[in-house]
Image (cartoon, rainbow, N blue to C red; front, side):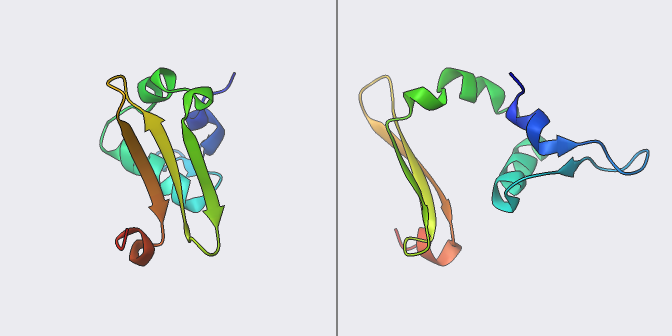
Length: 91
């Protein structure tokens, strides 16, 4: 199976150029930020595969955000959200 990074990155147009990102602009931006910080998100995805997500609130135009809830080993929950800054900051 191809990793998310490989699916969202294409070779640069010219030698020495930056790789092109393909897909949702927000997700490409977030993945680019993680990679720019010299971090690797794949270990987290391996630790919490999609089928282990507790709840996913998909994006819709009313909520203007999306969120994913995971259950932590101690039984507590953590929510990751992305969306319009004016909406996310109000929550």
